[in-house]
Length: 240
Image (cartoon, rainbow, N blue to C red; front, side):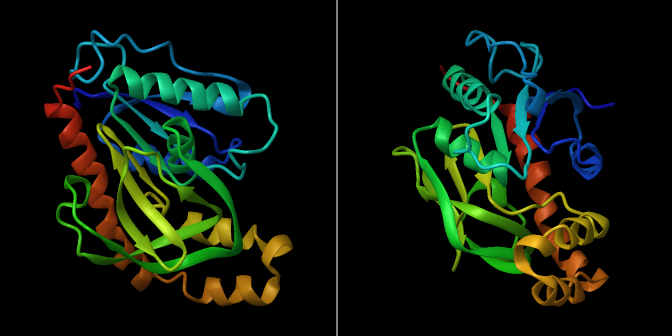
């Protein structure tokens, strides 16, 4: 049984796929918080953050969402504030898609809407970091987003990108990834089909043609980053 305990900050508006995917990919006991309903973990004690087993949670993961970080919704500012405080206290954090954007805002960066929309299995290039150990420099992964990090936090380092912009960054013990390493085929199909009103049938059908077992197998390479994050958390002795 795993010795890690993670807070899963689920921003996915009761999408059944999100919880299933992260529970499958993360080798940790997950305590889930429905942040859309204002649920958040307790404040992080800097005396215990970053030392596995010492605090209530060893790390936090912030999920994707159909929301934008700049929307005027009551639950969003408290989520950004909690993330900022947890990062400052030394808690390792992994943000995925919307979580990547939340983390960027929490650390002083800026997110904005894109001119277009990136969706489907796409190629990304990383520039090296322990989060990407064992992953080819150019790799395939499923992406779906209409917002992007346009200004990185001042102390952050860009780790991955493609023609749509920043796809990963790191600041100290915190990482954000814009893509979805957790997606399975059912999720990719479900999310793509749900974009018909926004993207139109022609584009959605074209993306669905590429949601194949072959492309999914290629994208599974990126799942290694979950193991890499867990390895970091296990050995972390973050000074705060």
